[in-house]
Image 1 (spheres, rainbow, N blue to C red):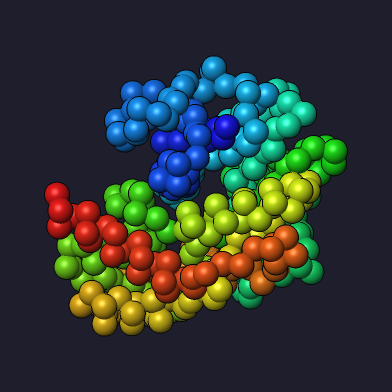
Image 2 (cartoon, helix red, strand yellow):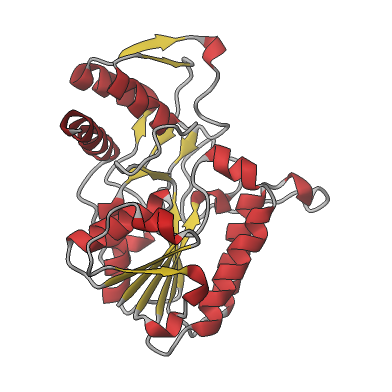
Length: 301
């Protein structure tokens, strides 16, 4: 039996949907049970409030509690520290002997310097005399990963996500992919700065494939970066969208940078290969699959 915590969120909901589609036994947990039920899950899927969660009841627990949208991260602020720690400790305290735990971490744990893709030799440098300048989101993920590495005897995977694309995306979001999908759907003009960036957008297929590979390899206590067969630059992404969807693009410095200070937000660390992980899609295919699904959903509504 699989538990997904944070099943109303972007990543949690998309992973849960794939698990359900594959016929796997799933119980979904969320703070707002009515909001969770509103997504129309099949009757065989268990829906429970987070307060009822006990990790010992499950073979696999996926902790997707958090905030993916930068605007949401900003609104939560430092509260993300307590929220992340509380539910991570809840899982850790209630794990049974058979429980395997996947914590959805982030590429943010590598720090703030992304002038090139990170790799297995990347190091983290923190301003020890100005720790308040470190984003709370980054600190929350780092604290969780540190506690997991200290529990070496437990089956815990810190799965670091860099970019994520799924039709479950909130199209009102304030990040690049949401703005891009919104422009394609509306047929409007996509305004962006001329500066380039590189992203590696994976989806639920890659996420679940990595989890499965980790379990089949014996569920070692470790962190793993999520990746596709190849990342893509912003200009290549936009060129693809212009050809495929007729997207109109307007480059203007006043539009601001879409990179968010992260020119290369992707990983070259391929430790997951040693566990048998072989992604089937590259970033461009993940994005076009996502936008195609969003467009099909709109045309059928």
